[in-house]
Image 1: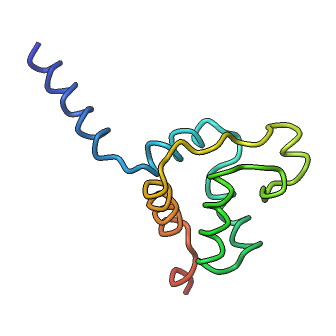
Image 2 (image 1 turned 90 degrees about the vertical axis):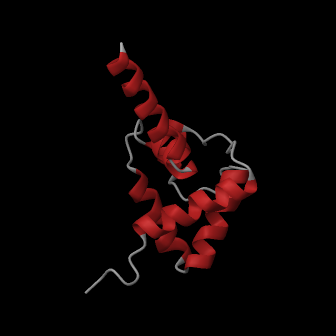
Length: 110
């Protein structure tokens, strides 16, 4: 019984310390056919700079639409447009910052 309780407490602690990015973005994208890094590279190719990528991603997630998406029409026809983010502005910006830090290529190439 004590072991089970310790396992539950351990899992709860891991979940409670997970970032908004891990809880909201990664958790959903793990179920998708296209991995989350592929979206990042599409944003980077289209918008180039950190500021533009983050701004565009933020605007899309706050109010997704076909006009704002970076995905091709065939992808949208098959999978549709994602739903609006449930994160508040601060959480969304933190999640986007974490996403940027994980996948940015600047300073990582040798």
